[in-house]
Image (tube, rainbow, N blue to C red; front, side):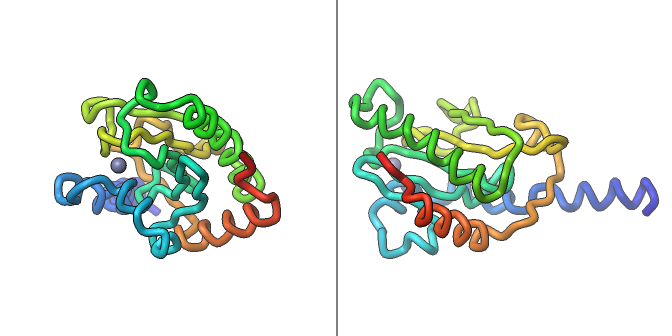
Amino acid sequence: MSAKKKKFESKNLWAPWRIGYIQGLDKFEGCFICHNIERPQDDEKNYVLWRTAGSIVMLNKFPYNNGHLLIAPARHIADFDQAGEAELLELTKLISQTKKVLSLSIKPHGFNVGMNFGRCAGAGLPGHLHIHIVPRWDGDTNFMSVCSDTKVISQSLSGLYEQLKQISEVQKLPNL
Ligand SMILES: [Zn+2]
């Protein structure tokens, strides 16, 4: 493949799974986390992996990397200062346990665990606290360069969802 062709393709492959997100950013009415929380019957469609007493874990439909999960409190709160101690404990345990289920399934070499506060900081949904769990592999793209990089996500969301569901069952996760 010529260098020119390669460059052309990489430009056109640019994060296609994020286009819908970017274009739909101001179109979605309300909060997609609350939307998912209120519709347990749609958990599979919405890729909701776990529900716990006060939290929810779901696949990010517009992942930065394969296995990108979101952990959020069930309550629509914007920041930690509005969370109770039980919620804080649950969110922290869920960080640990999502890392576990991802490690057992797709075997990342590392993780970025992060949060964005405010739209200028990259929060697509500033009103509802959520934690990003992003698996990383040696040689994959830089976490902060998602707007200019091409990545190939080799697994479909539904395939990943099934795999994580199965491992959760075997491992009895979440276990709070
Ligand atoms: Zn919400």
